[in-house]
Image 1 (spheres, rainbow, N blue to C red):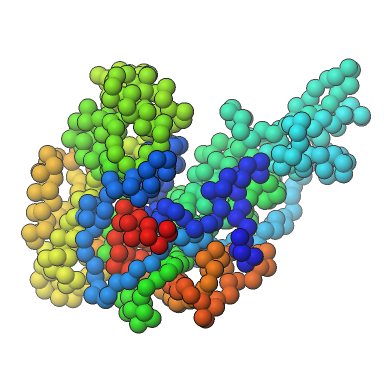
Image 2 (image 1 turned 60 degrees about the horizontal axis):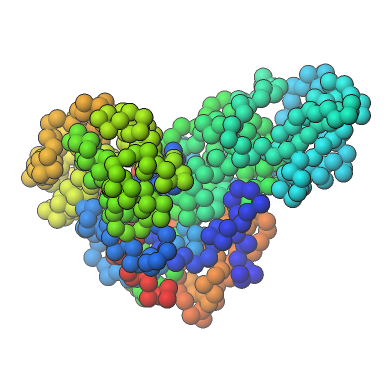
Amino acid sequence: MAESEPVPLQVGEKRSCPENEEDKPSKKPRVESDHKNGGPSHDEVEEEEVEGGASEGEEDGETFADMMKHGLTEVDVGILKYVSDHEGFSGILKERYSDFVVHEINKQGKVVHLDDLSIPAEAEEVPEAEQQPKESDVLTEDQKKQLGELQLFKNKEGNVSIEVMDDTKEKRTLVHKAIKTQFAGLETKTEEKEGRKFIVAYHAAGKKALAAPRKHFWPKNRGSFCHFVLYKENKDTMDAINVLSKFLRLRPNMFSYMGTKDKRAITVQEIAVLKITAERLSHLNKCLMNLKLGNFCYKNHPLKLGELQGNHFTVVIRNISGTDEQVHRAMTSLKQTGFINYFGMQRFGTTAVSTQQVGRAILKNDWNQVVDLILKPRPGAEKEFLVRCREEWAKTQDPEAALKKLPNKRCVEGQLLRGLSMYGKTNIVTAFGLIPRNNRLMYVHSYQSLVWNTMVSRRIEAFGLKPVEGDLVLKGTTAHVLSAEEAESRSIHDIVMPLPGFDVIYPTHHVGEGYRDMLSADGLDIDKMRHKVKDYSLAGAYRRVVIRPSDVSWEVTQYDDPRISLVHTDFEKLENKPGPVFNKEGKHRALRMEFSLPPSTYATMAIREVLKLDTSIKKQTQLNTTWFN
């Protein structure tokens, strides 16, 4: 690895450092794995509640390019149009995870940065009984060294025993508390050996039963929630929170956040946790890598999903073919006009059976097809255990036999099979209910997104960027149909289109009628969007047709070494490491762009408008295979 590249840090525990955590050139183009503002994307939702879903691929046997022959392209999900007429050019997105950097924009409109690792000073109300002696005084330097090694998994015995010479309950309590406060992730117990009492420290992380958080003294004048900035590399938000939960011996739902962030990226966001001190959180920086916590403060409220104003992106597209003039035209168009606000490819999954197919079957109340689509064998990128599970299901239709083929029962397939095993194949609705709610709703939202993309493409095809009579705009939260006269004074940036549902209206021009035709062709009635199962009743929503990013800037740089990072990260700045140095005579060219987007928009759709390239894994793999080889 080049000297100027920060050593990639493994997220989680130091005892393991799998190669795939390194920020090295990706052999699997990840253009689809975009970060979606303001809420979980398809892949992120799947990882939020469920592990090991079927969307991940392996490279055993077939090449990745061969496996992705069966994937979706943009045309398959209604992504057809561009707003500009500039000439596109090629480039590689996310060759390294550090080529995609996301900073959350909080509800005050401030871009979130990790720039302070200190613990906030405060006058703590400590009861007199706890003031003497200090916790830091009860452990010897040698004991601290042993405990530090245990915390970092360097202790072969797996525990540290500390004899309590002055055996009183107060002394033992101080030792227990000192260990847990100063060495996050360690648990303690008292044992008696040959008439002598020892406090035994051991590693709690990874234990199946997560202990309920202990009640510690909490000053009345301190906010109940510790807010902090989470900097993470190559790890999705929920995986990072699960790691923090293990080390702090908390349940993951003690943490709150405003939006999930992508895995293959460097991301910075705000997190809040209930009644955990900044000091305990700060201690985690010693033993967790690729995660950094800082900018601590106490507040009286948690964070809520969707509260953010958006995200600021720094994106590097390497090995670009466009001239400086082409780049200038493309980026100027993005800045001035924007891009069509399509739902990105990750909304629809990456395997041959797309999520919108399952969603359509749910809306049609065709539960046998729902089971068949999720469990049947499929071509393309799949993990071997999923292939075996599907083959067993196709052969025997026995949920228990198929379930035995899965090492991880928490994937979507595992949850569904477990439900079928518990409730029988005649009670599929209840069995399907074992899949977490977010994942179940992902399917029907995916179908809504397909309809929206398709109708917006028709709208742009029919009328271009000119508002017309029959288009919709929002007045507050209510949709209003434009008259011909009103349309004259409106911009394409005002126009919204509905996601189908029982609580929306549709454009009154012919594209509006297209909604009815499309749903009818799929066996659905647009006037009957309330479902027998309340969870799947779709109210609908309105979404802007064209989004214009803010804070747009760009530069074309040249470089020689493809291993070096081309972005100066918050972590590098904290470590006082120098930023990237560009060689004006470098053999490779890269486009480094920055822009901010509001919630619920996809950065890859902005990048698509610049490059004029299909952003699906299938197309990107075809385009990039020769370059990678």
